[in-house]
Amino acid sequence: MTTQATGWKHDLLLAFCATLLVLAINAISGFPSLADYGGDNDSMLRMVEVRDLLGGQGWFDLHQYRMGLAGGFVMHWSRLVDTPIALIILAFDAQGAGAATAERAAQIIWPLSLYGMTIFVILRASQRFAGANVAMPALVLSTAALFFLRIFSPGFLDHHNIQLLLTAASLWLLMEAPPWRIAAVLSGMCAGLTLAIGMETAPYVATLGAAVAVLFILDEKERMTASGFGIGFAAVASVVFVATIHPSSWGAPQCDAFSSFQFVIAALSGLGLAMLAGLPGQSTAKSRLIRMSMLAVAVAAVAVVFFPQCLAAPYADVDQRLRTYWLNDVVEAQPFFSVAVHQPKLMAARYVTPFIGILLIAFQLRSRRLRREEALAGLLLVVAFAVSLWQVRGSTFSVAFAVLPLSAWIARIRLQASIARSWRISTRMAAAWLMSLNATWAGVAVAAQSMVQTAPRAINSDPDHGLSCGKPGDFRDLAAMPATTVLASSNLGSGILMFTGHRALAGPYHRNVGGNLAMFDAFMGTPEITRAVIEREHVGLVVICRGNSEEISLAQDAPLGLAAQLVKGRAPDWLELVAATAGKPIEIYKVR
Image (tube, rainbow, N blue to C red; front, side):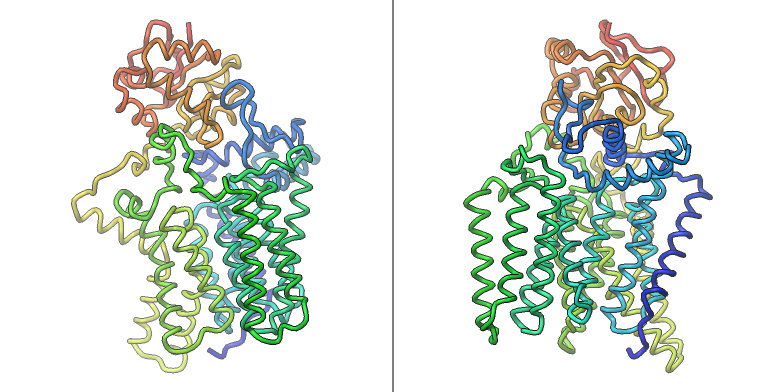
């Protein structure tokens, strides 16, 4: 392709227009993601966390006092995400907007701003990948892909959207180096930020860092790239460590959140990379390989010797009951084969376009050596796809990265069509467009599923389960009652905190071990165990949501337990149904 790539101002305008389009679609449809939060527990709890911060809870204090056992538990999230949301709320509050209006503004502005910035970054990266003007196909594919991922929908305050933006930005900026000298520093900073926000991006950050090292090993001209990336990465890690972690906790490593473990590894690898890149006497690839290998061994040795507990599988120590009734029911944590069997629509929408993108890069590799930009994007796409085979959440990244090779493919066919028009080329172009849209494959899966016998379904595959009781109005009766501790399934925990003033014993978070196990005991145990939990935790209300997947699982496995009895409409004599809630999505029982 020889067409000249568009400028950044042009791409910024396109991204802005795409964002306005999505905003208009949501506004016309009444912002459905705000009318029904469904199973988006993380976004609801994020708003609770922001409210707590604005209400005076300490910057370093990440306790969620209203969830779990008495005293709550410490969340593993980062204040880096709370801050911009809180600032938006404060800005609207300063203009005289009420609390509800200010929160609604933040719920719309924050995710859609990230949406526009992510489209801009993908547009720039796509043009660097193709070395030509691919703005139109990249715009269409990125707009559609990100829209159907739903992580940029109004109300989505979880950290996955900003992590995707920062990871994609790190890739794009790395493509811009070394000609744009500061790009490598900015790339390292983005990599450091996305890691500090959440450990889910560790594979992608490690891949980017390793790619920078390999580039320097193969080409001495990449010295400034390696040095800049390392400085940016280490600098951000240092600033975040000091700014978000209380000095008293500096010596306490946390494997699931940014702490001394991540800081030491980031600082050592980043500064080591920068220092080695600046050393003289590295004129041969062999000398650079030896020094980089020594750095890798040193970083690995520090991790093994000082932080061995963080090298195990992330969920290795999860209680078996939590694994059975919570983790195995979390959609984003499911492996590919489970998704393929139980949720073919999700499988088709999340796995097909990245796989096609990988094939396109592989075909290019057969005919010629990949350009630097193609190799970087291809490597990150392969890693993201591999992660998605382990947990479907990785497909959030692979779907976005696949836009780069897919848009280049469409642009090549469009160029052929402009030179020599024929029905064959037109057919190829139409097929390429359809094959590059993940919505197409989702539709194909739905059509195929309707034509064959329904596959066995797991509870977490039913879209009507887990999406119940997500409307603010569902919690209105509960919110009107005096504050107390509420016994409910973990799927309702975040909603209880966001829409009421109560405490929730259970919540879908791996650090809330005690609260969730107490909920299992109360809902599945013998009457004596149930009463003991109720009294020990000072539970004043018991709540059920009919059709909730978790309650169905608890009732099936403990047919004599409290959950099973309530699902059947049989309450023990020490519980009194609040008559006004009978037959509503959420039924409330008072403890006598």
